[in-house]
Image 1 (cartoon, rainbow, N blue to C red):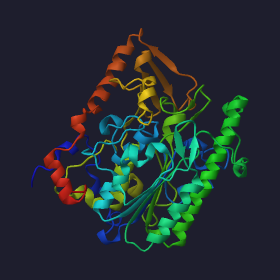
Image 2 (image 1 turned 135 degrees about the horizontal axis):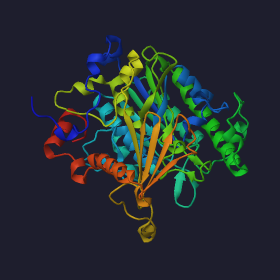
Image 3 (image 1 turned 60 degrees about the vertical axis):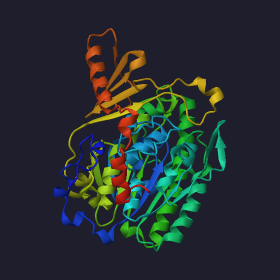
Image 4 (image 1 turned 90 degrees about the vertical axis):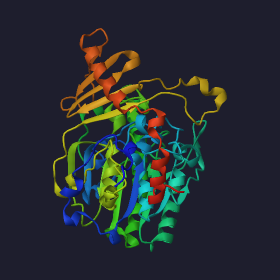
Length: 468
């Protein structure tokens, strides 16, 4: 057997997966499930009813969680739309796949296989319906991995940005499902932009049912923050309604029992509670903790909850292990992930191994901005703008430019209101920053390290993972 593709094997993950799967946990090659991936932009986990929110904002997503598995503590690798989706699709950190900010694509000869590439190798018919400019094909080149890529963005926000609402993206996605319902293996990705800023007030969803008393912190928010939250929550309800429409169509077409549905968010959103609004650079819980729900009837037990910390990097290995496990067994590939497959935890109830969760944010020029004003963004430097680490309930955030660490115990301070600050003058700073630099250095790949060699490319082409 030839050496395979050593450039693809940098970080070990899930090496014992197949020896741990039960026979019922491995689908026959002729009976692979359809895959529907739903990503909801800017969706915070703590604003969904199934994650303990005091209002019923998300009945469709709640029902999906009841029918499958809910990851209670899932974290985005980066709070920015384009890079986060690449991390979900490749199981790699932004500094590994190279797309650190919006407007940057993976190189044509990237060595990282995406979810749609792998599913295409196993004869899935695929379609994507995206709702915002950071995911358009011109910028991401993700369109080359799908049979159909729908990006008809007919609405605008701010000065340069285009998008569409949930109703705009659901309609064409439903048409595609209707037209392809009889095909053997389908992969459908639907990206919803709501509840992203500008937080339109959706009157039909502005007064959701109260399920429990809100926490004291919520009652203490300023009027501006409370008003923003009302609009944001109404957007969640609006998006949830259209997610319900999509899930109901899957049922109506008779696809439910043989369809893996995965729903998660690329990142969260600061709503002013900690003095900032938005996402991109901040690594507080509001921006990095996200929902992740999966349903596969007959194989994922209803009402399963995974309570350990997981990363959105885990999506690719988990999803692919569920639907095309033979991908791992390809004799010519030596492919592992920075993320970890959660299949054994989902299927067999095995406790996930304890691990540190990492997340990063970068600053730099945005790829969609005209060159004549691009000087307003500084280019990427060596270190990220911020690096975060979560170990159990202990969280730390390093801001290198400010020479500052923040430490939180989320068990005692889930809203991150009482940080322990560590400045450069503190004797511990050198030790802590050196540890963070070592981790980043071990994952920060040079451009040449992220690209295929001619021999690697030949193998992937021969196996059908990339087009000749």
